[in-house]
Image (cartoon, rainbow, N blue to C red; front, top):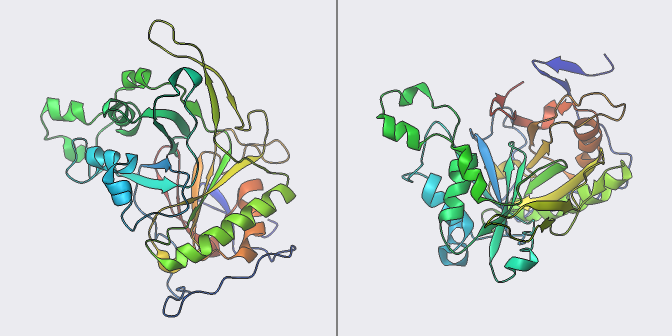
Length: 336
């Protein structure tokens, strides 16, 4: 079968093909911080239902991202609601909050005086451009409208109806958030959290540069800068979206590449997660086997980047030697 096989619901290839490009050298690490090349990678990912990527426009953060800016940040606010002991905490529905290097969308002209943050929700493949930072209302609307589960785990059967109702998603809250759109581009995330571990701090920027160099060579446009979201002038207290710029609509292959905070497994740097949007097609127009999936790789070096793009982004094959695990759009965790 051309060197690849099917593992359950997705195709795989055993090893990453050798590069044909003049890729960057593998970076040197500080003494005493080696990469673990012996332990198995498979299955070593967090058990989570959703990643929330906070757009900070920074490349690094304190060891605990909730301490950034003295705790006055969106990651801290979200953790207060869905983290351990939070109002909407659910041990059977883990919401993983990460900071990312992506910049937030600028507020629309009629709201230029309003400080806002943007977030990506993956693998829900949603982009929320405007979360006002003046109250908890929009943060709670994000949690209740998008992040809570649609159905509870059976272990919650003993809870009171009021408690069960509080832990369930309420789509009506989405009406409080404006400009939300589907993510239609490939999203490449690289752990670059040097404030937590220098291995990722060293590998992250090098791998980001390598992905941004190699993607266009393979016909994938790299989208940079903030997402420009145009919003209609307010009518009866509501805003509507006129259009979204710079997101790759109408293109089969466009991608954003960013650094993220701690995802676990620093000893397996470089750590890369590739989210492939629903509806993605292969080069020949067929359904992409990994559309709607997030694929976790570990021990990625610059020499692997071209092969990861070719095999996973373009052909939809998981590279077994680098595979840590994955997640489907419905939250199912993938194993080989």
